[in-house]
Image 1 (cartoon, rainbow, N blue to C red):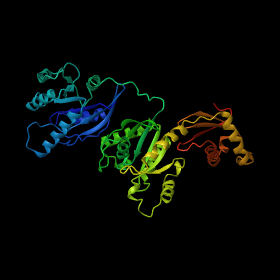
Image 2: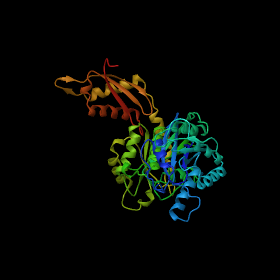
Image 3: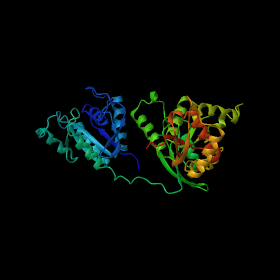
Image 4: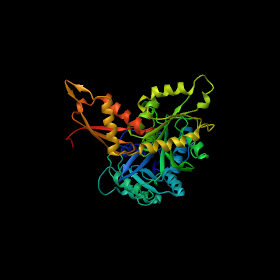
Length: 441
């Protein structure tokens, strides 16, 4: 279900940005007494009564103006009205109903969308001033007296907004056998192009402008290898480059897409190689224990050079050394080259991340590993590893019990993990290992 949008509109200088900042909980929009300070649409995520939605701040609407900037702001406000699920019309108690208010109200009535009339600057608590009742003539239903400055009435305003949202769908459940695949990477790495190539249709917008995809887009897909849901995500930018509120929200949604996925396709632009941003994107999937495949896209643009796959893969492995378990595949989303190879890799990575090993088998491998390489010692005290058991999947989680956690060095933990991989595979998935001292809860 798409995220509802609440657009705050009104003529200039009625307090739209002040209300936006209060609801957003931070100062995202410049607040001045000068009309026209807010030129573009600003967005911020809000949670209220268990519902998550976006609020949009807009430039003031001047229905009749020859000023070029005011006309631009009016177009932005009209676009906000068009995309909104609920519209909040802000008016000013002190100035009363103006001709501009009446023009905007008429425009909103034609939009045939839920409109909440907010009468701002009702700063005194109690019975509203007599001039408040003048706003009934806008024919937009019951006006709400609010104070964006002090917060009075903003809870009731949010209640009204949420009441107009479509019913919340029950939490989505995925059928058995359906694999959720998040396509992640920095902006313009070719995520939407890859999803479109797989689907065979222009499902998501493809543009050379970085950041075209603003939200996560879920699309079911089925072929002879199985059933999937592909999640095309907004490109994750470096934090210093995320300037707009909507960009921040897009990154947040991309992270949420990773969290609800089963397998991540980490797209690398073959022309750029592994950048610092790529390591951060891949690191997010790794830290969340997601089965992953490293997909080098745009290979058709570099394949004719002297860079061989083996040489390039070695550089990828160096750049993403913490993901040595992830297979690397070279594709071209534009031409379709090797895109078909992704499906068996996705399914294999999913199955490996879902693998359950019996305690008996695990301890056979553990005994053999301890026999091959003796556990470390420190000041005459030797590490003893008693037994191991699996506690979870996606990713595989194991608990090892020993006599002294301090003796269980990182290098020996890696050695045990490598032995598990040699015997059971776990290709494409991270492995989590928890060390406990015997007798610990």
